[in-house]
Image (cartoon, rainbow, N blue to C red):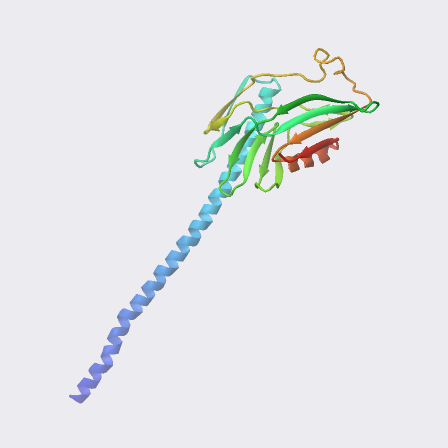
Length: 237
């Protein structure tokens, strides 16, 4: 009987080891699965966010191209798909940013303002706080801290002492869903325009032309200035 009792005592720890081992393995599987799901969800979310931002940039660039067709008189109406892949909408702000074009007579120092117009913008806010915007005929991106880059350049050129500056403005406010309709509300010729001012004629001699831009994306406008090697002034809003 003692022998049998001893064998029973030896069997009991082995009987407990089976369920404990199973519970330990099961807990490890649950922990590993949870970790994989958490990491996988984060990676999928980050990939989705990147794809949405790339899609928004592509949509804005397409809007820029089609808006140029309308603004330059090649089309009366254009429609563009602005689907971003998420519920984020596009905000339209008619009062965002300003461009001023002026020139200074180098002989007497008199300054003449040719125009000073609000540019407006169409803006998309990403989930990480960046903004992608159409403004002044170009597409820009900003991180909200003053750091901006140009995604698509505006029709802004200075070659052989000739400045070409068709300013495309946004004249409405509100939000846009998946589609936008672009139409030409008004076209104004500022220069040359002898009817408006007899001095507004080519060539403009003995004068320094200055383009002043007030915008959230002024740093990127400054890079555009350097690329065109023109005299202009940019400043924050």
